[in-house]
Image 1 (cartoon, rainbow, N blue to C red):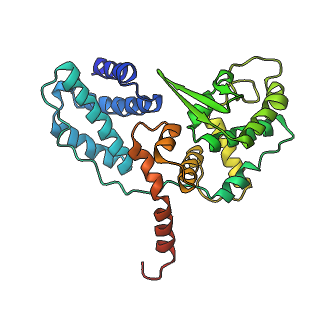
Image 2 (cartoon, rainbow, N blue to C red):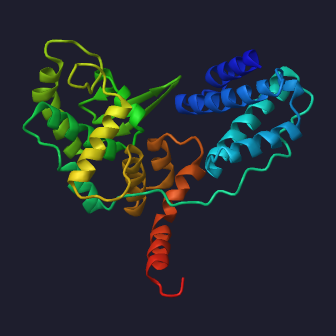
Length: 294
């Protein structure tokens, strides 16, 4: 099964051109399933039946995994076996009868425009670290890119004259524009802050930590949490919250769905469509919280 999983992951990368995050997620889910089946003396995908898979689903539920996590595991297994049937000649697909658990749809957390403005004003702009942090926050909200794309940006990905960045993934490049406020924050960081953080070292990366190494996702997450706390924002904020906020605010202010899809890098427009419903989600939340007859 080890070889089959590895070949499938290469297929995702080379043929399907899936995102790195999807590849990491699917590999994690499939490796977990591999360990379980190995304990059941099952070592080849052709030995796995729908009954085995249902037992595995029950095992995941006993592990107290959320319905969303179990559903993601099912999606990974289903994609894996569809590949085996289509590309490797496996006769039967045991995932055909699998039914994912019901997942309660939660509205993505978004910040108000006022909360975003307050958050972006938290870094101390008279220090190299503060200049960097302000530039990162401005760029994240201005473009809606993923935190992995933000921390992976290189100087060469920044088109200063035209005002856009290029996010690179596999063979696909995605150009996302940014506005004047972001340009000013980036300009000050590059002019006054970045060299002081590098302390004579060289780096191709746009954003570095105080040691001159590329900023990590975990490092930025900690920075964001600190500023959210300082701003008095009580919501459980993550870097993805700014991505959600970017999309919701763009659509609420008249941006067309297709353009927002392209800027976010969504392969399926239905993923972007959920942001159209942010207004009704908020109304529902207020209603549920405030109406005397729940």
